[in-house]
Length: 297
Figure 1 (cartoon, rainbow, N blue to C red):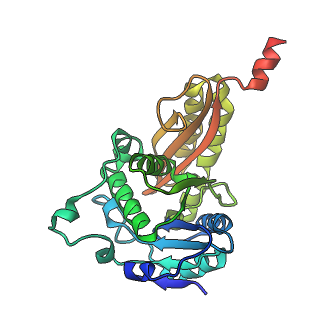
Figure 2 (figure 1 turned 180 degrees about the horizontal axis):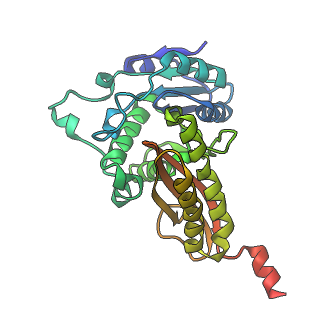
């Protein structure tokens, strides 16, 4: 049976395990995408290891006017999903268990994500990545995992967590797991439940647009971006709900400048009827090796 713990002292009291400890950090409202992370963690930890799922709606990564108050909190259901996917422990602390008292010197300490934290999602959500990295670091200290798994849907988060672990010499292996999608291709997200049927139909154009970008990437990163925007602009003009493209970019795998040729990442964020939806895919910029070989003949 999955244990539900709320205090760090309870984590500290857990017995040692022979295998590795793997952690999946969530803000709750778990869906099949989260379950896939837990399944992956179970496979890595093995029968002699331990899988911990953290459930914590982190106030420090929500900005003014964002959906902290209405963010879904479904702990009982989250425990069921976690247990069915192979979790041994669900750690669901209160805010006071995670952060020092307001007004103390310790409460003011936050992790600086560096310049990347102000780009893409960081440009639209100032302070978000500082709050995210701070809570991830704190939860790593509490759970002491050997491995932490994060979904590629939040690709910028994954890149920054990896960078933080490297910068701070954290003894944790960071593993990215593929995005899990709905039947219509939409990336699974806790925020999908905010979408009306009309908004959902509009949002389903996002993965199709990214697929267009993958196809166009042989002609360069600009061609990929144009292909994505072309479909999204068409979808926006015909949608029955507001649909606003925040950004579409091609970047290197570590989110630096786009390469002229080679593997890269295509990222897009679209606000559909007030709900912010992130998605991304890998792609190859420029001609593939097969194309180059064919051209040489």
